[in-house]
Image (cartoon, rainbow, N blue to C red):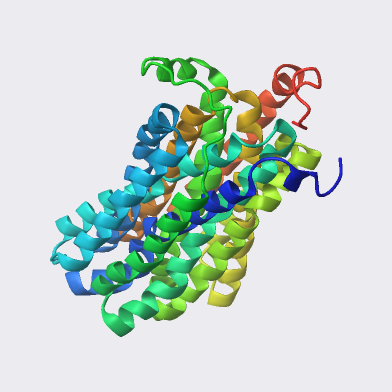
Length: 404
């Protein structure tokens, strides 16, 4: 296979539009995390309330991915994505012009921002349907690198909040999202080979397949760890080490950039050596460094290094999971993207909220991080249990040209 064969297949403008839409959507999806220190100070929130505030968009985004997955199959990806973007723009306008003066209004905004997190269920099928099996890891890795939007939120939101006030940050976000919406409508194109829409009841049938549950669990650890940390690390660095909101945002951005930018690499590596092998190694690294982080390192610089390595592993694992999913569920990729993405969001909700409750109840973040490190070990054990069956059934050379 020639090195440049990937760019001779598929539809590059759609791949770019998918990435851009995903990127900016994820930026606003986790926006409450980088703003949490300022919001909590003004509203007098407890550690548990801060944790739930940043976790709410993750949960609603997770649940709405099922809805978006259905819309993708019935309306096609481009139209579903356009609807989602209009809703998010309206939510940002309400947040900017409304009165966000209590905890309930912030949670309401968090639920609305969940629509942005549901972009996952649109951007990946939009790109995936244009590419053959041997290029799925690379295509979905590039589209999925839109995770980097979470880094932009951490990098810029605290500084903008300091300069203009945190509520005005929501209005400023309308500008780049509006530009991306126009670009998306101009460049994105639905693949000609989209599967026929299914009756709603058929979407439940996929849950009868145990492989669907395995993929949901695996992604709840990789993406759940990534998104949960992306939403929580600004609070963590501010509380644990006394860093200012802006500096804590910079530290968070470094961690998130690491995790998001290696997602395409995860897909590429999985295409070359197999998704199972790639994912297994990433679980080992993630579990080890999350456990190290749980010990409460004395130095904020050392903590930064540990979290960067953990995020590198989780981001690579995200790409590896979605090298495998289209091989197993190519005809059901719309609904499976929604289901697997939902599980990832729920994992992120669990991690972000548990860190807040861990801090409030025990006075440290150790318990929350330790439990999630244990989940990574459990995922490794589960993957080891199914890998032989996968490689001799749907992942065999007779069934696919991709490496499993």
